[in-house]
Image 1 (cartoon, rainbow, N blue to C red):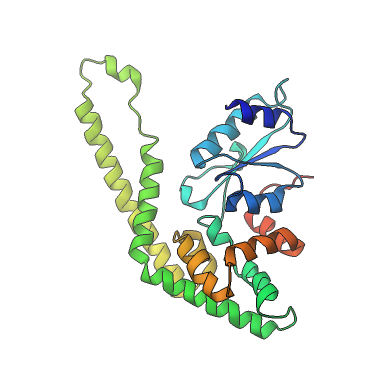
Image 2: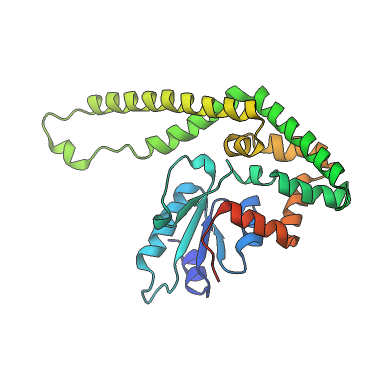
Amino acid sequence: MPKTLLAQLVGSQKPVLFCEGKPDSDDHNVYSSLYGKNYLVVPIGDHNDVIRYTKAVNKVKDSRLFKFSALGLIDGDSLINFTPDAGIYVLPYNEIEMLLVDPEVQKSVYVGTQASKDDKDLLENLVTTANRSIIQKVKDNKALIVNTAIKDNLDAHSATLRVVPKQMADSEFKFEDSIKATQENLINSAKEYRKKTTEYLDQAIQSEDIMKVLKVCNLKHQISGQLMQTMAEGNYVSFAETQIADNEDLQKYLREYIGLPAQN
């Protein structure tokens, strides 16, 4: 663990929440607004880093070094299932950019930019229009979404494939056979994941279920930046993060939907 990070953790009076990203990234900004009162929110790179550091802290908690536990929150595109016992939680959106276009976040942004809080019909129309545009964008980019999801899955899957060192002492062991088996494993995984992702995406598009779409959509800035910037007539991401920081009702909704354990 880097010395600067170790010093930050040892000096903290709060449990730590590791997340993906860098300081002042969208992840860090949003999670600090949602959990900063009760957790030390630490952005720590990619999902592998989040998992590794969370487990490392929890392994030595209650020692003289650490007096607190740690949680890790990774993007939904990490494609790995963890149990709460491991201290790792998966965002119910594909990534932070999709959280920023949750319909409730949209409403809060529109109240600040285009409509009054009491004009419910206008708010619903704005959200409905934006959601239809998001779903159409997803429909138009279906192949890219599916193939990106497969790549992310293969990256995660291939990281778990290792040659056990003791195998190398076996006179019958051949790297060629191990490589062939690994290749077949990856091909089968890609086929299975293509089928699974395509079926889920088709169903989400067909039903026009925006929450299901946000769970699998990986278009990032095409949605939260380009598309929503037009809808909100300005810097949508900045508007959304400001609303999350200031709106306690919105914070409560997002915390409940994300589902981290309560921390008093």
